Image (cartoon, one colour):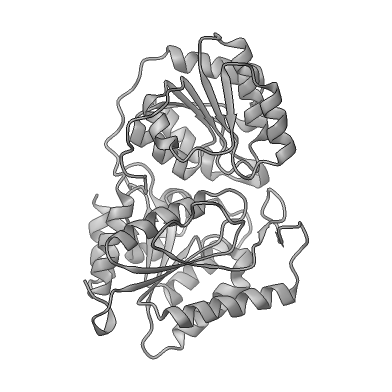
Amino acid sequence: MEGKEGRAPRVFFYVQHLLGIGHLARASRISQALAGDGFDVTMVTGGTPVASFPGPGIRHVELPAVVAGDAGFSGLADLDGNPVDDAFKERRREMLLAAFRAAKPDVVVIEAFPFGRRQVRFELIPLLDEIAAMEKRPIVLSSLRDILQERAKPGRDEESVALVRDRFDAVLVHGDPGFARIDDSFPLAAQIADKVIYTGLVAAPPPQPAAERFDILVSAGGGAVGAALNEAAIAAARTLPQALRWCVIAGPNLPQAAFDAAVEAAPDNVSVVRFRTDFPSLLTAARLSVSQAGYNTVCDILRAGCRAVFVPFTAGGETEQTARAMRLEKRGLARVVAERALTPQSLTEAIGAALDSPAQPMPPLDLDGAARTVALLRRLVAGAAVSRLAQDSAAL
């Protein structure tokens, strides 16, 4: 496949992670698949740097990093915790526009926006304005997870629809419509139905066999808000049979003091680590996963066919993880402990019940979203009609 002037098609992929690393991980999986298929990929990131992301073969542009001002995502701060000012925003905006002009892409992919990441409108609206003014503009796509955060503020959904209708060619929903449809979490989905294309869930490829075996894997994603889960899991390990071998993956963003406390509190049968690149492999040999219910972790669990206990993240009014976890619980694939009800006792009871329950067969969900996204971009670059692709994907 070739882009303009016989060269490899160029993709400009923007992703802004603010608290966890899920958005960055999913975007990196897609970008790796694109690069592996011959696309020339530039990824622009604007969050805390994370080792190994976006990975080899990707041209990486790092904007001055911002993080969420708090767990409710109200406002932006720099890595020192200082609120960002207009000069900081101007510097990021100019760097983003310069990177776009240098990339000369055939396709622009913007992760989450305009359904989320309103905090970075200061740079994304100017980018979209510049694209709209071009004589020969690139294809513009929004890249979304399958379940969106519910919006409490009036008018936000209408703004998202207006931007999609005016500035985006298509919305890639990285999910299986048999599990969750955008209609379930976005009330105005019918108004953009002709632009919605389902790709399947973006899971990692089937992993290699595990090099090490743990009975129970505990993971808290990026770790920024995982201290309570780590503490409850370590306490549960002291109560449950000592023959069980545990691995607590605390996360790269867990504050150092909290990580040190977890290491100190862990009994001999519990290993506490920051990160494991072989997490998907470890799941294939584990008896149980204990985690939040982020998109990427759930994809890894579904790929491995592992039992699960979920403690969905709900701070700041977050609803997406709870919606995902409850869908899996209804299918008999998981047990759910509400974050507000998390205690060593409640987690111990859920883990014990999960270990005693028979394993359920995994549903036939499409986990090959990265490869399907590559195929969709190939067809879009070749001139395929978005409306036909949307109809085909909805029928999956």
